[in-house]
Length: 579
Image 1: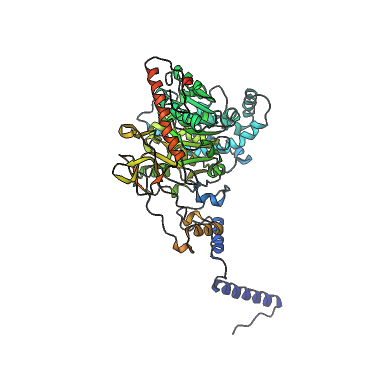
Image 2: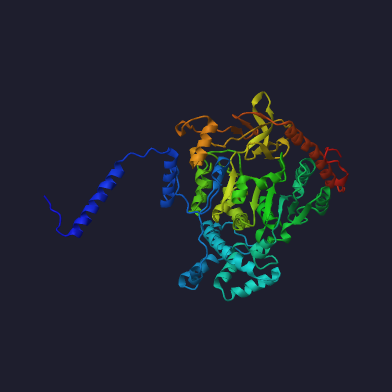
């Protein structure tokens, strides 16, 4: 038998150690205290976040982020919680003077291509993985230099000159200006930096883009807002010069309703670098717009509510960016997610739960309506534009995705900005399929966060993609599904989970079941089946079918312009849809 040491101090230490071992063993083997299950689950979640371990049931590590949103937002929106990009520090500035800093600058400031240069056949000249690193570095610098610019006095030109003078003695300011010129050269059109452009943003408004080919569409869409919904939001219509939208059509747009400005984007941003065409104008128009809070609207998109409600949407208010889901189409497509993974080793919480990453749909975002606060999400807006640059889109983003659609949320991922998706997939609005009262056929519908019809994209025709240009008889709609409000992964705290269980009429999370399969699209016929057929309200029917009358006037005037006439939009009664 071992005896204790004679020293009183050693005896005391040994006894204390033994007591601690016994206490630890008893606590380890004791059953959990009688406490609420959700309190314990919340403790587990907090511990995982502290340790940066995967959350229960998730596929990725919890991101290092200080960004927070209200917990109940997860019941109506899918929210991207980004990683924090560390702020620029004095140590970073000092590093620029080292051999490592010299090498970093040489890599970050390399030129991909010159204005007018043809990169066809040379995709290796564009490296999106390196581009993403450069843009995240730029974001840290922008957040560092912006307060310096704000502290300067005088007019914008005077401030910019002071910034140029500052760059002579402050290497991080010099690096910022050079990196911006490398990444976003189209910004420097009559200005020395993005900061002077950013300073001009103010107010809220709508942005449309239209050339001669979209003229009739945009007339109908704008008149639907002004004459039927009585929306008072200011509107800017962007084009790419008189060869894109004729002076006669520009004059018509300005005169047809109040609060409409027609703007040539190439007079604000440098088209020698952008080389705009087609869909690519959309993000650049949003950037060039004078609005601080900007909502882009497709020329053939129509609302059933005043679009102003989206500026008060909880997801937009929480993140500064609101996107809408596209239809669920073409599963088992891997090219999009594979490309994103190849260039973005750091991603927010969103991609892992997206349909694209889970091979449920080739499409994620519908870009017919996009809402962004440019004051708070400026680096994200720049990254979106970069993905729509001439060779970025021709060699990569438009080849991988269907045009500009995914460039919005992927651009935000490149610089780790937060954003929210309205949690309902693209549905349908229109009429019942002939001989089938369980299918609705027509245009792609999107709901608000309360599940009511809000806007649709695709015009007023039965199926324009198949050349069926007969007007729809609007009477029905069907949700595309995807609300998934009962999924446990969206309810992270006790109060929210209890509310969900109460709403569903069940007593335990063990009774939760996966949502039934979302309705299925007949893409060729533009019909959706498998969901609940819902009837539009009398007001919604009146609005939607009333837009047809407006469209007939727009098409008559468009035909007259084509024949060299100059119709006057002010002579029409747009409220009643009569010429």
